Image (cartoon, rainbow, N blue to C red; front, side):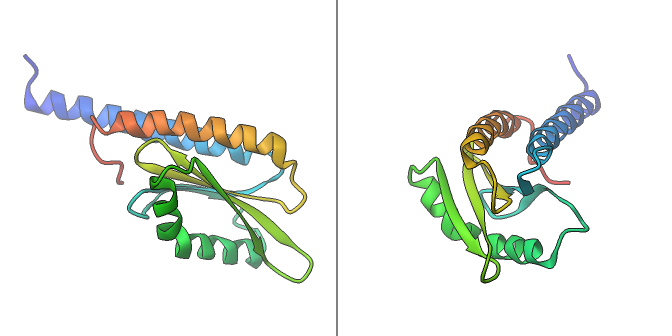
Length: 149
């Protein structure tokens, strides 16, 4: 029989592994040159992890703020059956950035902001695969505990 302390250590280790897996999966997309930012939200709107270049232009930060503002609306659409949603966020007169929202399991939303000239066909395949893998990790963590740090 396990003691409560060793059980807590096992849970902490499992939670740490789950968080690490989530960060690795989300970071994977950021390795593509067409990706400007990735953000993983819980369904309650809290950010689990995000990746973007801190030296990025203010326009990408404006898009990230916009994403945070509309996440609750998008969450409702995803809860009612949509697997993904795409918006084109106009950042100036000459450029709009594709912004994708993917359902990641039962508890998460993956948001990916692409470069305006991205190969969206290839990226849609990668984003969909990543969202599925993240969904598996996020849903599995339900038995471990909450993913808050």
